[in-house]
Image (cartoon, rainbow, N blue to C red; front, side, top):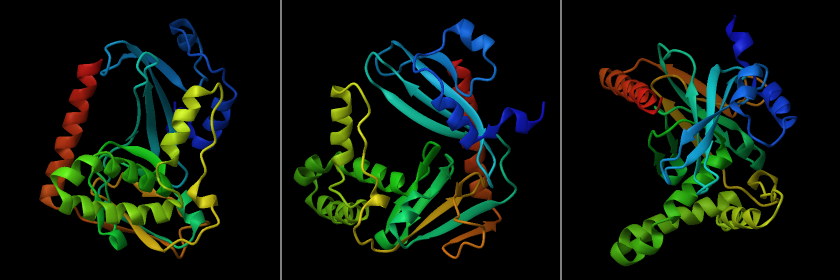
Length: 268
């Protein structure tokens, strides 16, 4: 069976997933339903020790490559996370993607961040180090960064006022990009828990507010990250450069791959 048969386009899979019932599969149903785009397995929740559900989807992203998207949720404690992993080999060259975010519609650009990729926004003097893989948007990166930096601010205000003031200045700039107070998403999530249906969260790209232009760069020595271009690869606000990896980068990639494989063996 060819890779194109295994890895359906993400748009087609998303449409098919929308037609599925919300209830999780039983083991028998999972074995008998090969056409189901989402595969579900029971997994141990590391927060409470109960059984949660891991959902996996094999797909391909147009103009990029095949990927595996995974999400976990525990209905017992509410713990959830998601991750994306490359389904192909490490590329021969590293890649540096650059996108200029000049208007709010650019915040909707999708991006794939591998666990070897660091993100830089030069205008904010912000560097996000490599961490778990993620399928998100430019807005998603900004919103996640705002949330993560905000968590310990009350403690920093007391223990380290200098660092608190520096981070607060950065948070103000992130708020301007998001067009809200940055905490709106968390409030909406709390409301969603109290209602029977989903609550719509306002997208920063749809707001009628000015946006100060900035640049976002994805630097991935493994070559397995990507940011969306608009129209074609001649998009004037988008560029991609390949480069030779250093010996240090090759070592770091090998260590991450080994750690990832060992993690799979442990959880199986």
